[in-house]
Image (cartoon, rainbow over all chains, first blue to last red; front, side, top):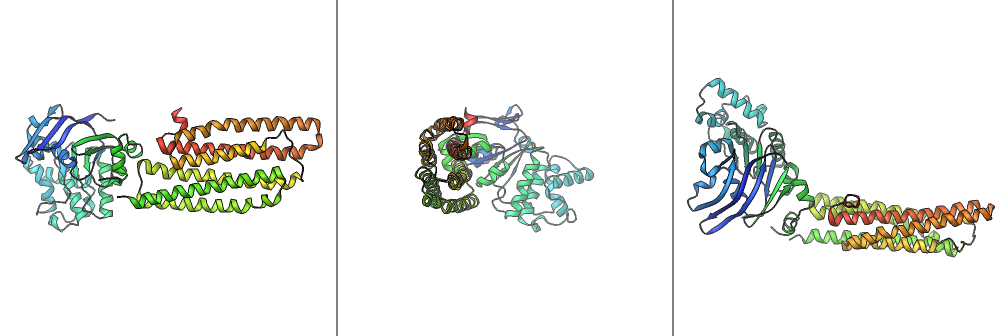
Length: 250
Length: 216
């Protein structure tokens, strides 16, 4: 297992009175893909959002325990700095209603980069890394809304990459895409793990098997089992994991 | 929730039992044909072996369909992949029973010597085949292990057949062809025992996810 980039210690999270995460302790290995699986409402998306403090926006949320990134507890560090390092891609592609170029340049600009040459370089690198450069290089000034769903999702990945994060969180990034776009995003994720750490929530068991190195199975807010994907899908240790992945419940 | 998949798995296990039962019948017929010198029984083995071949194709195609449609994981994946490996061994068992019957005409009606324990050996491997397939259906590791253990008895029978045939040749030098034919029959039965062991090892894999060699 690679060195852990994120270490979670006894993490608990409540939405009001209802506890959504219970005593989660795990280490997310660097430069690998970790899949979070489990039935709806098991806490996997909540957990993912916690990793870059997206839950901070919800007023009734209470969190205990710690998530350590770069040696610091993320709940005690500055949120914008954290989100620059830990980026997020959502289920539904959400490009900004502006040009392809401006979508990518948006993040770097907010972090103070003004030089046109520097921005050009970032836009090209990010689009190349997200495997969409060849498809959009001749229409960078066109509105991003005109792209197909699969292209929009890769654009959103490129936008996340533009601020040079270390970790990419993906919340069911292919659930709204057709099989061809899905396969491109999956290929992309596998290429990106050379440089980035990826944590992905997926409802597609086969996707978890295909692309992830590690899998975490959540149930009713608990982390039931965490380990190497191949092992978990061939010899799960916990009966609840076996029952879920073989479709006996969930 | 997944009743259709469970039905398909139950059907797979039923077909495995049927295929195993056909092999048991083929071995029993071959052994009886030999001990009773009855060629009518021997002739029934070849068509049975063809049915076993067909059964192998049918089970294989059912397994491939299940892999495609259900994309099984964990125990489901092991049960299906083990079945695909096991049917190759079961099919070989059918072939070997047929091979035995092909030798019988060359024995020219000579009576089987009393110290050549073919009947016992055939009885032993039939039980091993039955139990190995049963162990798969019941996912019973202990039964699979007992099959593996019993192979030593079969090997012992084969060693004694070999020794007794050597003695026969010493005293009766014109029995060369007869002795070699009987030795081959013994060897086919011994190989059937080995195939039953292979099946039992796949049963252990389908239950535990580990191969016997890795476990020991």
